[in-house]
Length: 231
Image (cartoon, rainbow, N blue to C red; front, side, top):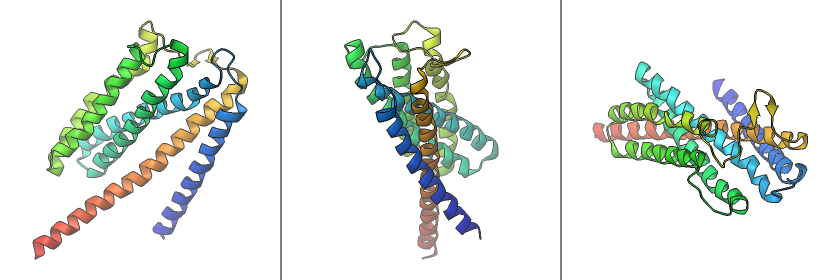
């Protein structure tokens, strides 16, 4: 009875992801008004901000899952940390690609060593290194323990990325959501919030699929080792 329910929930998640992403694309590319100063290039903003949010959220999951692994010693938390880190790197890569595309016509340069940009680049390198550490250690328990410790330490850069525009003078646009509200035109708000929702749903869809694939890979490896050992 559990499997059919799981399959149904997965199908519902897949369809919800599909429709939410397409609605977000329509709102961002068609419905939202063209920004007067920046023009159509500003539409990258909806995907850029949503990707940045998802990257940091994914790394928060790595942080929490790493702590839970060290406390409970259950490999499911290690798998969750690994898959979330991989997804976080993908979304942070999108941030680092869309940022210069958006900045070039506005700042007249592809890259500046702005505090927000620099700390984001450091964050990207930190979690690329997380993946390299996992591949470099063959023993499962040792790999999970070292990865968890590194995942906790690497997270220290995430709050710095988030607060960079508040702590330092920066060319990067300021915080959109403040105590006084959302600093966007009313017609832009649906595209902004739907993009955040769509990318969040996409994260959970990718996380579910990646987690299952990794669990199956580990189970297959265990069965193969038992089969070879029996022989």
